[in-house]
Length: 594
Image (cartoon, rainbow, N blue to C red; front, side, top):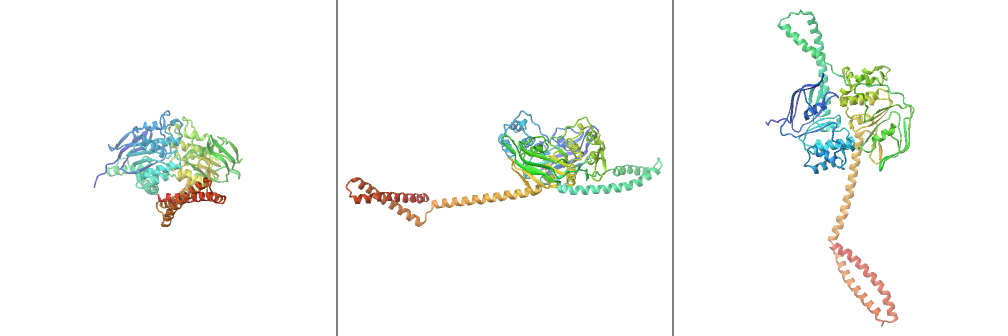
């Protein structure tokens, strides 16, 4: 049996920042063609691990060994290019100097057509696509992706999903997109409490097996605790001087104590924060218009939002989703039309830009600026510290300074500040970017139980399926459609609609091709009757032309009687018409014959 050399082998890897240990002595390997998803809570070291593997970050101890012939590609979570470069120049800087045509082709597939546009003018989604193109066109053998779907619209996410599923790449990626994980990855690596666990299946398989692991761990801890109580009593009774067997039992006691004192973190958080009362009038949009030059965003848009409605907004980047939200929130003005907000509406707005925190503040102090306590739906009150724990900020982390937080932890903290104000209308613009899967599960459950209104703009298909009742689909150029269902239902309808359109186009093309083929066949072949007709026409036309010529000669002779002159004058135009008619028919048949 042939020995398979790993593409990557990690042994005993440890990484810490000061007192914070991200992972300790973790080991794993990747074989050629494996597609592995890396899952962990924010702040557990996912992005740091990828940076270590790419050579951009150091580590405390252990080893990272790549196979010698492997070409490695790395897509960072927040890619950077010098702002003065053009799109094409940015891609060329990434080692693609000899592949200009391939770069242009890849950019076209990713809907980037203006390769001369400067990097500084690109949106976040456009920049991510440029970075993707520069990595993929390099044709790496081993590809690492850090949140590849962040800032990508649904069309591009599904394109990348299909591209990676069909490729032979060895893949290690961090993503919160659970559908993406399910459809692309064949294995899952999880970092949990500084230890790495491996699951030989996709995301759905991982969920099942992870729960089995946690259940087994809970049983182990419970048994250890029962035995620990017995052994603790023995330790207290025994004198200090002990024989060899007693010392062995004492050492075993301390090992048992480590197991007994472990805790399984319960991430099934119930966020039953009380929403403020909301009346029957929410908001009413009446004949809204908005455009930027020739780009139309809203064109006579009217809508009445209902109480407790949960709306999702989807559409490609640049179709106006965020502009619509900003108009609703009063951050931009419509060109014309009115927008009336109900008096009881109390917005909680989570924007893409996020909140600018004071880097020198502690996490707990940031939250206390908004509220010292939070009222729950059952009348109980929760302190700011307790609320942060619900959002997976441990007591130790709460006293960290903001500048020590990871990007995902900052977004989680921002979400806390939005929810703590007891809003009754949540407007969430791309809330899933940079949040870990555990936090997303917490937020999904909260939104499902939320006694208020919700608008969500998101490219996270799984999240949308869990949360929304219906969709506003932004198709571009102010074409906005209301779909009564979640994202998966919309995609099924949309695919069926496109399939129907393709079938109709195929039928029409087939009919046109058949008609054209018939005409072509007719030109090649004359029936026996038509061929006889063609031959007769040639004889008839020659005779008529000869008769016409004789008539014209006679009419010019000056020797005709009045009766003959009148007879020939009437015959000549009839003769000319007959010649024209027979000549036209002859031309039709001759064209078929040739």
